[in-house]
Length: 262
Ligand SMILES: [Zn+2]
Ligand SMILES: [Zn+2]
Image (cartoon, rainbow, N blue to C red; front, side, top):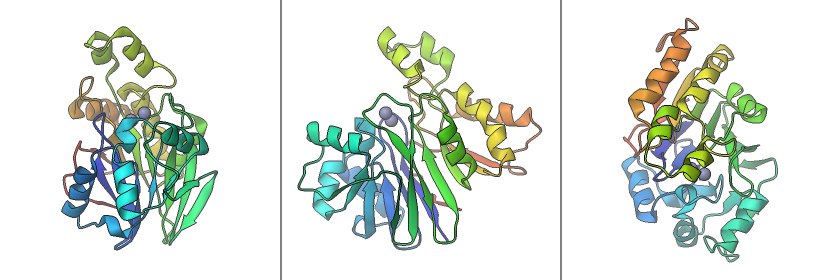
């Protein structure tokens, strides 16, 4: 049995635990070290049992606790070559740490972690699909400027997926963000909107990804209700019913103490 525990999600910070009963990994560490330790302890997890920290890219909301966590627990860090280089350059990581480049995939205890590249304005961003010992797959796919075939394929082959549903386009366009930031978010290397996410969902469900969570919601330009309604409308219009044909939820900004068993 494997589980995913969303610890944090959204513009303020992102971190997920994936593992079995005792051991596992975390993907991203984008809050303070203390907040991550607290969130883990709420969920009965312990940083000392974490075998590795996988980082998707160097933006602060994905790695702000990395330096402290990796040195306090001597946890190995995995990321793409470009991300590691950028983390070192900006002193978010030092070469004293156990860093490892992930090129394609890596086997770690009883899991296989596969790198999937993403279209995002970072040095060499990616997301990760994790295959557990009982051959179940989970993917955390956020910070997606556009839905590429590579990410699409990663989601379709997963049993459980967290998919980015970052913003409502109208809220963003009419919101307070400066023009350059709006353009950045809307670009092919920014974030996936509710609309862009929703239109992909029926195909995912049709292909067997029956358990989905919407993640990395913008606090300024989205609400959990808007993200959920947009997604459900797209699925309902293809005659797919929630809790009958699929399970869909929104990842909360901070852990609610719930794990997803998949
Ligand atoms: Zn980012
Ligand atoms: Zn992010």
